[in-house]
Image (cartoon, rainbow, N blue to C red; front, side, top):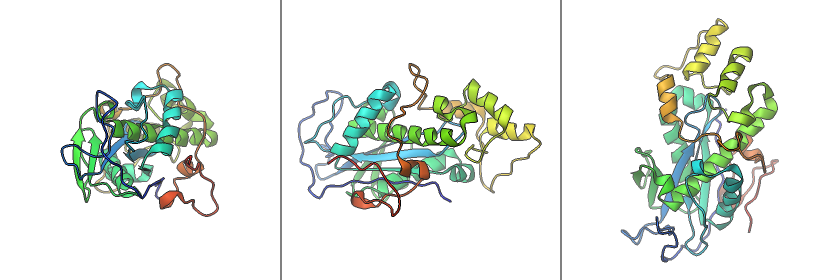
Length: 289
């Protein structure tokens, strides 16, 4: 089953251009270089871990409802990310959080799976953007114009907001996995290849949520005499690539992701309908109104 989740919210009235409150970047979703553009920020979380999906988010901020403190999710502690997550969900014009599953990562490779998650997030927005500003040096194939911005999660507030939504959502998903597989310690490392996680892989072997295309997971299978066979065309990830891909890290000051407010839809990989609807028979953390 495809591990895919989207969470949406939209407003009918488009925003108007306002002056920037943050001296580093303009928070308005309207791009001043092209006044007719509606801009969404896009970022991901979870390229480097050995387990769990890769999650991406797209956000269109409302210039009339500014959010102070937006920054790259990696430099924020878990408590601050959680507080900003709630503000982004409440105040944004539109947002969407989506993911690519472990199966998709192992079939496509981590880069292409990340691009797929980003594409899902942008296409899931309840308000259609005309320009996507994406953190990094690559853009997914979209039906709208896109711009890759290296370090954009610290420069463009809409990308910062997307990085926070993606990080918090993925951390919550791994906390749910910890409830099912406590032996791996997902609550402490959210899937990254820490010494604790590597030791657990040796002791218990991988589970279905580990990425078989990543070298430490393949090695853990090999220790048990299991040869990993990937789909034709799939590529593997060695240790050097994992280090390069590990853009978001477990909090150095806390050692664990935020624990509050586990979203059942995120954990189950469900899709929430546009305009904030809920899938039948499931509960979801509805955005504040």
